[in-house]
Amino acid sequence: MLKLRVMTALVLFPLAVSAILFLSESTFAVFVGFIILLGAYEWAGFAKFPSVLAKMAYVLIVAITIFSLWLMNFALSVSIMNNIATGFWLFAIILLIGFPNYFKLFYQANLLIAIIGLFLLTLTWYALISLQAIDTFTFAQTTITGPYLVLSVMMLVWIADTGAYFSGKRFGKNKLAPQISPGKTIEGVLGGLLLAIVIVSLFTLWSGGSMKDYVYIISITTLTVLFSVMGDLLESLFKRQAKLKDSGHLLPGHGGILDRIDSVTAAAPIFFITLSWLYVIH
Image 1 (cartoon, rainbow, N blue to C red):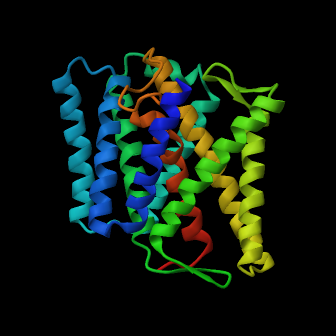
Image 2: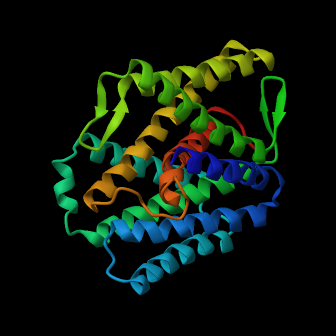
């Protein structure tokens, strides 16, 4: 299994990085949209849609929503979309904290689960496309373009996951959410967060950042990493209620698409929101 996971990762990693850095805005939007639609098919399984046809109908609804946003050329202002994303993830926090009591409302509520998936997947697409479309972002004495901002949020997730794995394996004792994801520990989360903060601090030092830059970048990193964990937990929660071990079987050794992008579904919107709040982006 480990060999299969590594082989799949060796294929996916360069593909993802190449797509982020070298695709045009429109092609990147289609590429991310395709991944999101694969995730939508898996989410339809969480909502216990009874047939392939019903699942494809759900995928079509998600596709129409994304395409409508694209056709409107993001007519909804950034602040409106950011407010929607903020409200959604505050709702997700309440859901996670209240598990399993609040979650009893979702048993047999397949339509509600489907609507949650629609919001989650659409907001993920919107955040990634919005980040990639940024022309210039000046951090300290460094100018960063949109594709590198997308790569930055992906790297934060990868770094935090790596730190959490090794920290949890070495020091993990206290379970973070045993009823949702028994393998996650508080020590693992803190280890992942610490590693991410150390790396962005070194980058800030290398970039000649001011104290304000340090405060801002650590704030962005902290929120992004913590919410990436919530994205992971939210997907695990809906998998659990659907009695599924993996969201799918598309990726050998890794499960489904949602199993790979669960952290990104929260990290990308929160990264974009905090970046919009703290910096002027063009």
